[in-house]
Structure formats: C-alpha cells, structure tokens
Length: 128
Image 1 (cartoon, rainbow, N blue to C red):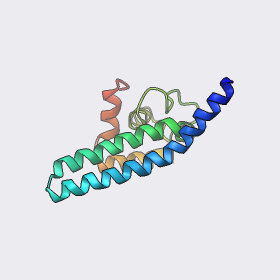
Image 2: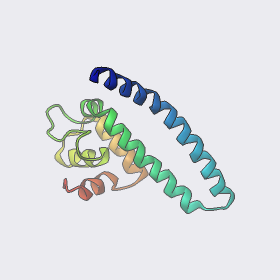
Image 3: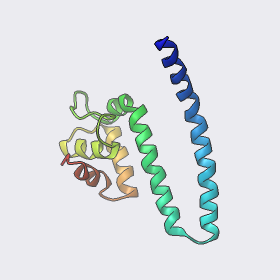
C-alpha cells in the first residue's frame, strides 16, 4: 500500500511541475504588465530577481548530479544539491581551483550579469 501511495504522490509531483511553471509564468506576466503600466520598475526588478532565486533552487534540487559532473572537477568534496545554492558552490569551487572549463564559463556568465555574485554567495553561506 505504501508503494502505491508513494507512486501516486511521485506522479502527482511530476505532473505538477510543468503545470506550476506555466501557471506561475502566466501570473508573473500579468503582474509585470500591471507594474509596467504603473511604471513600478523597482518591483519588476525585485520580481525578476525572485524568479531567478527560485529557478536556482529548483535547478539545484533536480540537476545536482549533472551540475557536479559538468561544473566541478571529479572528486571535489563540496556537492551541488545538498546545503548550498548553486552560486555559492561555484564561488567556493572557483576559489579552490576546482571548476571545469564549463564551470568557469558558467561562472563568467554569472559574473557578467552580477560582478562578484558567486564569491558573495559563498561568503554569505560561510564557504569562504
């Protein structure tokens, strides 16, 4: 019976992800449109930042094995998906010289958008 309940909950979660993403996106578009019409740029930027944080959390939860395989050197002891945000792990791995070529590229993109982003994230979480 427990296996059946677990399977049902797992299937519900799998169905809920795409529905939740599409629904959330539609709601955000309406909210941002209303903010644009009222010229509330500060709230729009906070909303975009909030979406970025949530996307990072989901990525960290569902793609931890992939992130570790592609962004950090084999055998690196700090893992994605455990305790720290993706940016914090990238910042620590960069400081330790443990980023792969792809990891260095991802870090460069994050740093282009927000200079010092990965190092600040690692410091905020006590990694460096």
